[in-house]
Length: 111
Length: 111
DNA sequence: ATAATATATCTAAGATTTTGAATGTAGTGG
DNA sequence: CCACTACATTCAAAATCTTAGATATATTAT
Image 1 (tube, chains in turn yellow, brown, red, green):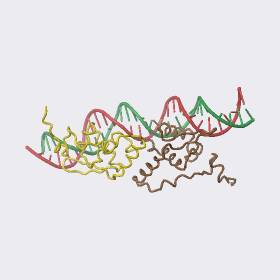
Image 2 (image 1 turned 90 degrees about the vertical axis):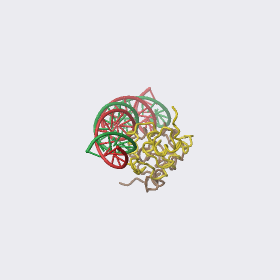
Image 3 (image 1 turned 45 degrees about the vertical axis):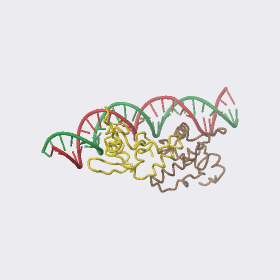
Image 4 (image 1 turned 90 degrees about the horizontal axis):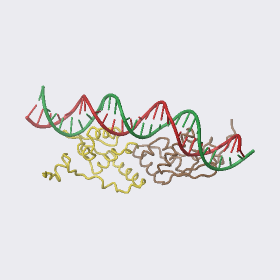
């Protein structure tokens, strides 16, 4: 319960709506230090909300039970949080070096 | 969010599933000091989850938006909390002096 | 007005959570 | 083996939350 009642954690979970993401991506998306994000991920992992999958150097996280999203939507609605949650997770970040973001839209050859 | 992620508050909300209850009833039901219960009620009130109605000396509370119960049920299910929430709110307490409890089942003339 | 009852609020100590800083570990490439 | 990268963990200070104790307010009765 209190697991998701935390801004950074809530944000992380929203980012995981579209599927699994690597720590580096989440770090860029949150605009926080890596250690901090890792801490929150540890919290969520220990609470059994997310699971990790290692692939080489990278670690990918995804939610264990997608019903948490329903819960978040419900909570959002009750709190009168108008912004439809489904839209707040841009899967591609311009300044992210993770594989997914690198491959797509990586036209940053400007200045 | 963190509003309901608190044992006493969660309990209070469960007690309010059956409708409005007075503070004295909630106090007996929780087995806590009156001031403590009142504090939690203040918390819930300020968070906009419950509303109060005064009637003479008594103050009755009820939830503002019953969808919080759906939220609680959802959360309970996800957390694997088997006990079906609907059953944990005995409306009548033997040792409660509030009007509702006094009127009914007040046969406590035994030892 | 005084007393009694039901509930509310204030305060501060204690407990917990959050956050930053430093450091540790595990894969990968040279 | 050494260096590097991506991530994890530990530790402690700072912020926040919880709770007990004392006290205040409002309503009713005398």
